[in-house]
Length: 245
Ligand SMILES: Nc1ncnc2c1ncn2[C@@H]1O[C@H](COP(=O)(O)OP(=O)(O)OP(=O)(O)O)[C@@H](O)[C@H]1O
Image 1: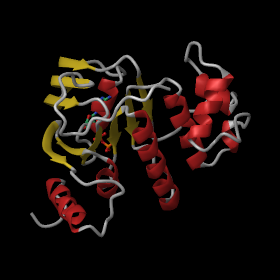
Image 2: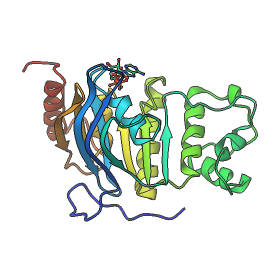
Image 3: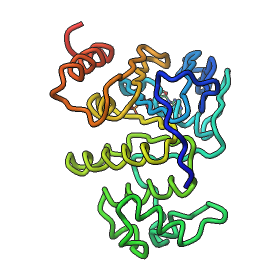
């Protein structure tokens, strides 16, 4: 896979990898679930999207993925885009490696093996999905995303169903993949700490609008004990309406 040079959130970038302009999305005659929302994501930038339940996070992601139509406005993103969901969505009647290459023209068993190796599942290409643990299934889902060599990777609460320890391991894995491949990443999460551990910039959504955009100017690896981490955490919690405000 080609490494795309990492561009930090602050670097001047002429062409964003992803551009959302005045995006509005309604269901039927209902209220705007996304309300004239604009957002640019730079090549190689890692964005975490936070927001209360119902704030429009999944709708934004689905619209970016082309799974949901745009009511008004526009969305531009690379053709090479991959999505990983909360559930791995592996087909149980196909082996792991077959799932990894599914729907990807030209992808071979060797491509699957390389992607599985990278996510720490190189020893189980012939396993059946139902024999995998939750963490292993999500690793396979990540391998399936990687085999597409995405310039833009969307992750919709990919660790939400995992236990705390597995979740930490998966966060490390995603961080490593991002550093190696340099894709732009959009991670939807409910977890403020996860957002601050991983992202260059945290975007808080509220009723379909961006309530806050918070750059995270801390180097990696990040530590909860860092007072700057804690200060950013408090700001995010306030923006989410948690804690004293
Ligand atoms: N297919 C649909 N038809 C009608 N309304 C919908 C549909 N999908 C989503 N909505 C509404 O759009 C709003 C935003 O939903 P969305 O799933 O994007 O929120 P979310 O921030 O991802 O929430 P959560 O954190 O609970 O996953 C909600 O009020 C939801 O009820």
